[in-house]
Length: 403
Image (cartoon, rainbow, N blue to C red; front, top):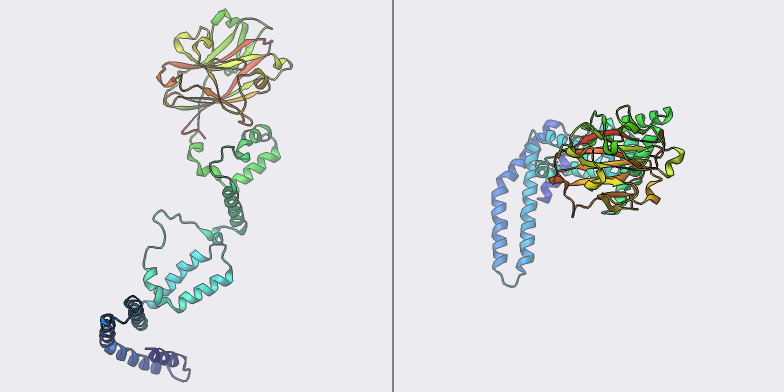
């Protein structure tokens, strides 16, 4: 067999012969080998059987030798057959193009010299790998990416992002710094032209929000606040712009409270954004917000034990993370709050919006809001308020899931 391979190489490399002469000689060799193929195979199998019957031989070792010989014979026959296959060159071209797509993807970080050498080795011995390329190469959920449309800096940035993610400890409980600062970033800088252009340019370059369908499906609710007349206090405050409860007198002992004009849907996931006035007397202002029954809109909210209060425990007071938001030493320095609410899933959480370092929640073991019906959302100024102090619902959104 080795001599035949050498003969084929000499014929191919002989530049003195015409293509017609080479084809004629190669055909003769192929025909001769094909004639001997069955006989040679039978002879080798007979020898292998004799060896197996001889107890002095290491049968397991000889079995490996036999299989290797038969494999080499089969591969040689395939190499000969490939010379007669008109589709061989086409298969080689298609397979090498696929291999090149895999190897030359910059995300693999292979060196050019390695890829060149590897492709050359495959192409030179393609008959060895022909069956492999006939299998399904990519996964069924393979994501087709137009790598030609990506520039070098895209590959670099993607690899840097992957490295950053890989460096984050598994099951890390501390929030990623970039996520923690998101609210502060948009709240403080988005209205500045330079930052707005920078953010817009970044989102055009890397449309990350396109990967998060629940963000795109946010539905901001239209609402308005209605006055509650608890403690006959409705004349002591005004509703400004339909979203703000604003005091009209100084230091009344009467509580001021207002409620949203809709009943909470138990199945929906709500996000409320709350802002507290930042006047000079902010260190004294006491406030709260939370849930109340529709039938009790003109009653004391805190008695229902479904409220967050800045200086005491009235239902939403379980410390989930950080400091206790119901302690006045903590809450007096907080001006923005985020509320996550879903009655059906028994979720009622209060977060300090800027950093999200501190989170309070209802005690789910003792309070199950999923069993309650006809609830509204309330805001409240309870004491030590001055004229022009206020509490505002910045927005109410319905989302597919909480992030």
